[in-house]
View 1 (tube, helix red, strand yellow):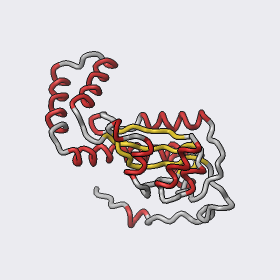
View 2: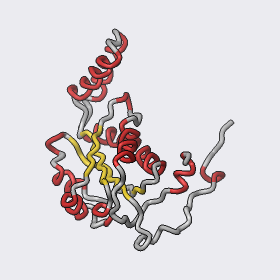
View 3: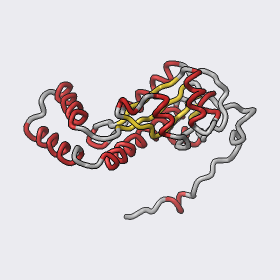
View 4: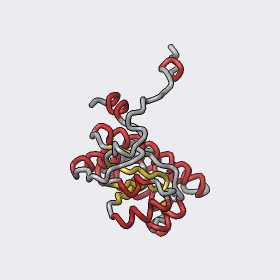
Length: 210
């Protein structure tokens, strides 16, 4: 499928059948997420991939008992940095220098600029910014899953503090932002499986400025 066909195929699956998604499909989805763009390339979030049945059941309770969390093959948890720190920012710039070789005076000036802007800001401001970067990767994850014909259900409807506690995220300087169950639709239980996709018309949605 091309990207448009994949987006026409996908929908927010309401019931999954518990079937396992093959490792090769999962790895391609994860690689697409890893390659997602982010502001200054910092990737200020981490991705947890959960397959443990007992843990999925526990997380289901924190997600308002949405069945997909328990019945999916793999549950992805997008967890953003709770703030930007000098160590986190420097680790990224050091990695670039390691991979590309030393980038010179201009690159180091850019490093210092990012440090001077991000690090002094309030943690709440930084977390909001980091969360937005996670959303970029989240969108790419859904497209990547659809192109693999793997179903997904985007979820903001959960209790972040409970998810953070279950997964021990606070100790890692992370906060859960989004959940993405991956798996396969259950035709017998999913009331949306035959529903027509509804979106605004192109003329109502797009303003073309020439």
